[in-house]
Image (cartoon, rainbow, N blue to C red):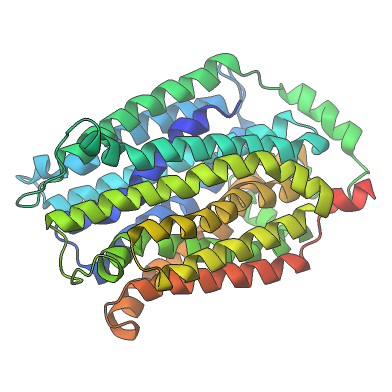
Length: 439
C-alpha cells in the first residue's frame, strides 16, 4: 500500500540534498537559496488541499487515490530528469530560471502524489492499526530517502562517475542520480497501483456509520459539492488538528532551514570554505557528504519507525513525539560543536529519530479525529501547517543569514534546532482523541 512512497521519497531526498547545490552551480547566492526554495511550500499550499478534495470525490477504474499517484509520478519524473540539466535550455532562458522552474514542477508533482498516499492509509486501516500503518510508511520513506541521498556519493566513490563541475554545468554524478531516481519513482508507484485495493465509497460510508457517535470530534460529514467548501472545512477543523498545527509549524520551520542551508553551512563551518565558494572540488565533496549525512538520518528514521508503535503503546503517542523532537533538536544544535565531518553522523542520528516521528505521529493522532469521508481534504488542509512555516522561513531565512548571521549559514541550523525544541514543548497541548476513546 505504501510502497510508492519509496520512490517519492527517493526523488524528494535527491531534491533536498542537492537542489541548493544545483542552484548555486547555476548562479544563486547563499542568501538567495531560501527564496528559490519558496516554490516547494507554495506548491504544497496550493496543490495538496485541492488534490485532497478531488481525491475524496474520485472513483473510477483506477480507484480513488491511485489516479493521483500516477499523474504525480509522471510529472515529478520529468522534473527530476530536467532540473540538473537545465543548462540545455540556456538558449531560451537562464539555467537558474529553468532549474527553479523544474524545482516547481517537481514539488507540485510530489504533492499531487504524496497526500493521497497518507489519505489511503487513513482510508484502509482501523484506528488501532494506524500508528503501525503510518510507521511502516515512514520506514519506506526512510529507505527511499537513504537510496536517494547516498546515490551521488555512491556513483562517484564506488563507480567512478565524475563529480567535477565546470562553467555552470552540474556534475555527471548528480545528473545520473536524478535520472535513476525518476525511473525508480515510476516503478514504485506502479507497484502500489497494481497491487493495492481501495474501498469503494459505499464501503467507506458503512465504516463511517459504524464509527459514528464514538468520536464527537468528527466534523463536516455532510457531502460537499464545491471546491470552495475547503475554506468551510478549514474553519470547522477538529480541535486536535488546531492543536497539532503549532507542533507542525515549528517542526517544519526547522526542517526547511536544515534542508536549504545544510550544504553551505557545513561547507563553511566544517570544511572551512568561504560562503562564495560553490564550484570548487572541495565544495562538491562537501555536497556529496551532505547526501551521506541525509542518508544517515533517513536510515535511522526507517529503523526507528518500526519501534514507534511499541514505544507509543508504552508511553503514548504524544510523549513519544515530544521526546523524539527533543532528541532531534539537540542533534541539530550539536552540529556547531562537532570537530570534523565524521562526527556529524552522530548529529544525524538524533535528527533521524525526530524525522521518523514527524512523519508518523502527527498523522496517527490526526486520523482519529477526522471523518473517513473527509480524510483526503483534511489531510490536504493539514498540509497548510507544513507549508506555511516553510514559506515564512523561505522569506526570512536568506535575509537572516545575510544580515543577522553575517553569511554564516550554520546559525540557520541552530535556529532549526531551537524550533524542534519549541515543537516538543507544544505537543503537551494536543488532545489525542483515540487515546481518550480507548481509555
